[in-house]
Image (cartoon, rainbow, N blue to C red):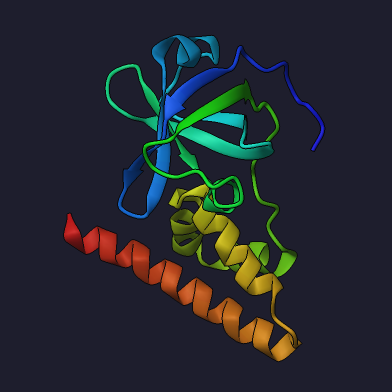
Length: 162
């Protein structure tokens, strides 16, 4: 992965645990240097690896960086350990490219399109991957129909809950 922006000075933080997730709290000074905001796209380097992530709110001006276990395990790091981290702002776009058949289906089902675009980036990516992993055109068509129906139901369910 090419460098997209110069990294900020490295800092050390203690790995914490929330359920099955491991994370660190990013100091407010680093958050400010990254431009602030509630969700900050970053490139993180820790345990000798580079990952793409997003800083999320952790109370006040602090932000949380969720760590990847497949990076921590080989380095034998876990909750309670100190971790050296370098962060850089990630300015690359993170929008998933819609497959043509999904885009066409959304033209006829605007409620499904609205539900899709309201979802998180990871949810949108999973939907597209599910469709792209179809081995046959028949499977792809069945999955497309199911995706559109579930997204439309999601929107209808939201409307009745209000």
